[in-house]
Image (cartoon, rainbow, N blue to C red):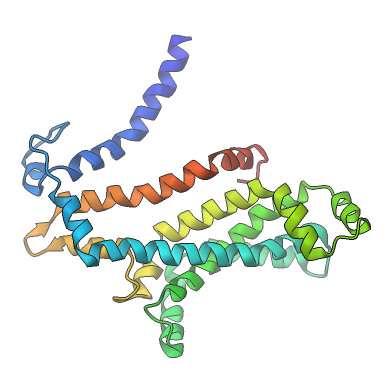
Length: 265
């Protein structure tokens, strides 16, 4: 038993090592980081975090990222829920082909769409706005959300719909009061993956913004200068970018486990 428990423990420690190293570096100066190997900071400093929390360019980068990620998650789920319901409950001409076409959008790299989105949003006045990045990310997140939600919805018997209609429920009332609570795990899983893709995606977010909606990932490039990289500041910024994802994972952890159990995630 001890050997069986030791292997997973070692594996978890191995996975946590880069995170620990990042956090440790965030409390070091760039000079100490470059001076040699050390498990702990020899001289603890909070200057890196102080810079992030006092410089508007830095903390607005986090706010901008959270803003467009939240908008994207809401839009993606709002569009994906009725679409997934249609795919799970009805059969129509070209349904399988349309479902596959949605997934092909998710397979394409973001770089393919960077220039078309840039020209389109510049023409209509959406460049450097939260909505620009949020809408661009829906191209990838809506197909993913539809695919996940369709699997959960197909697991709900159609008799539930028929019983609700017999009891006098209108479709909107049935969908909100009965159906959504039944698939809340699927909604949580879809929201998690939409959030995480939009949070870590850099190319489109950087291409479609300049100043007003500049994300934190683009702001982190400020650490490069003619003198080199400000490694301590970069590590502190990287540490803070982990926190929103960790919070989301904490809230949907049970839903993700159920998603894996259903074989859809």
